[in-house]
Each structure stands twice: as structure tokens, then as C-alpha cells.
Image 1 (spheres, rainbow, N blue to C red):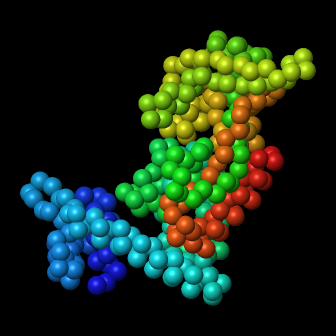
Image 2 (cartoon, rainbow, N blue to C red):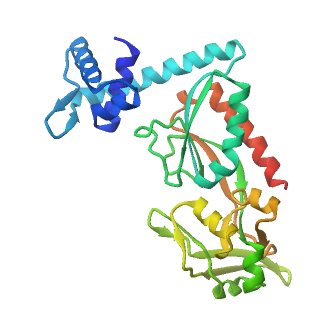
Image 3 (cartoon, rainbow, N blue to C red):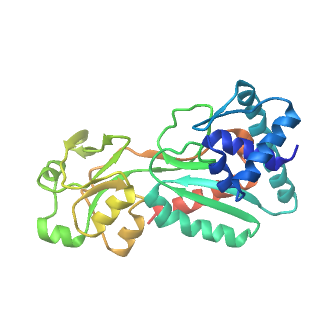
Length: 302
């Protein structure tokens, strides 16, 4: 029973398609089908129920899938540990990250890491929706906020506040807001995730010796479900945005955008590196965790 057949079984179960699994492993559909039949013969059980329209995993296959995942994870961890003993970080990582944070900061840092560790392979999946660790074969994800699944392992990378910003060209044309309610007169660029529209912007500020809370429901002619699109609109002078300070860090340093209402603060949100299980915390994962912590701290001091 070879590991290639086990990996093929897991990919087929996750994707629900032999053809899709074969594409992921760079093999023909015929070879993949033959390998699955070989695995079923070795086990003496049917792993899938096949029909002309669908492929469905059997109850026996579901039980075997649990052990398959654990076996493949353990083998990868063992291989990484052997490299770690030799002072090398190696193996393959599939990393999911938010679109704008990934494009504007993480990609350069990942390039640095891979140059230092040529035996390490990293696949980057960018998007603002939460990744499916099993279906997308994600080893770790970088995400804002608390995670609903407490069985996963989360390492805090930084605490980030959201800031209000716009381009100098936009402010020259439409004026600088002086207080939160002034945002009602402006085109506020909106981000939408999972059908939830982020159109209520909240702030706190010290006024007359006490902490005051402000909540403004803004409006816009533009909305996107991709954070990097909102950032690009901001830089292009299409309106005002309320985004993670890290997402706008490069543009702030370059003068492409300026911060608005700096005396009004937003509540900080944790940025976490998440692994689905402790078994998947390899030396490569710990390397990314430690490097990202240092890099985020440097940018937040800017």
C-alpha cells in the first residue's frame, strides 16, 4: 500500500471526483481509477460507490479516510522533522491568506523564506473567504478574528486596528472629514464578505476626559467582496475606506493614501495563523509564524 494511492484516495474523497484528484496529482484519470481499484483490492472493501453521474464515498471509506489523513500528516511531519535535525526546513505548505495582505506584504516575505530554504515548497491561496482546510488541502491559514472551530490551533501574529483613509486627490476634491459624522457626506468604499456588508463603522475617542463611542452607517456607490479591490479603489481616489492598518501600510508609507480621523480609534482585531491540527505544526509552519510576527511588528511601528 503506497502513499501515492493513499493521497489519491484523500483527494478523491475531498473533491468528489477522480478526474479532479488526478489533475491535482498530475496523473491521468485512467491511472487514478486503476490506483483506487488497486487500493480497494488491497483493503478488501469498496471505498466509493460509482455511477455515471456521481462518485460517493462508502461508510467503510469514510472510516478509512480518517486514518489516511492521520497517516499522511504523520509522514509529512516525520519528513520535516528529519530535515529539521539536519538544520533544513523542507516539505510542502499550502497557505491561505487574505487577498490584499497576501499580495502587498506576505508574497515578498515568502520569497525571502524560500530563498533561504530551497527545499521548502509553498503554494499560496489568496482570498477573503475562509478556506476549507480539507477540501482545499490547506496546511495553514492567516485570518483576522476569532475562529469558530476551537479544535484548530491558532497562533496570534499581531493585533491590528482598522483605520480610515483616502487618497490626497480625493481629499483635495471632496474635503477632509473632521469627525465621524462627516463620513455621511462622502462615498465610503465598502467590503462585503459572506453576504455581510461592512457599512457600520465604529470608533472610540477621548473627549472631555472620558471615552466616547461613535457608530456611523455609511453609504457608497462601490462595494466588493475582495479586500484588495477596496484598497485599489482607495488609492485611485474613488472614495474613503475603513481597512486594516496592515492592508494599507505600503500605500501609507508611499504617500498614495493618508490617514483620516487619527484621533478616532477602532477596536483592534487579532491576526492569527491557524493550523487544523497540532500534528500539522511542522518546523516550516513555526518558521512562517516566527518570521511573520517579526515582520508585522516592524510594519506596525511605521
